[in-house]
Length: 91
Image (tube, rainbow, N blue to C red; front, side, top):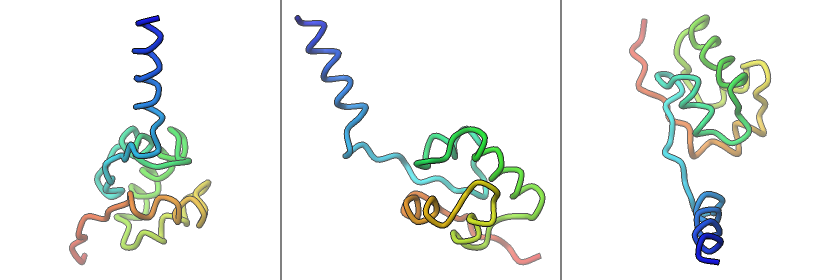
């Protein structure tokens, strides 16, 4: 019974809707960090974000993330508060 209570408490803390992930800077984060921080973004979509960034340069707006294959406006909207952009120096 004691192990059940511990396991139940752990499950609640992991699945808690109040557990908030730290925001992620999509211009500097690794694919693993992006996948861990954004809802609906797994390893393959996170890798696509990094590949897009490598090909086209840093993101200049959060909405630009929707240009990545597999990432749509709905995904951007539900993660908007979790996405940060490092200040990008003009080139």
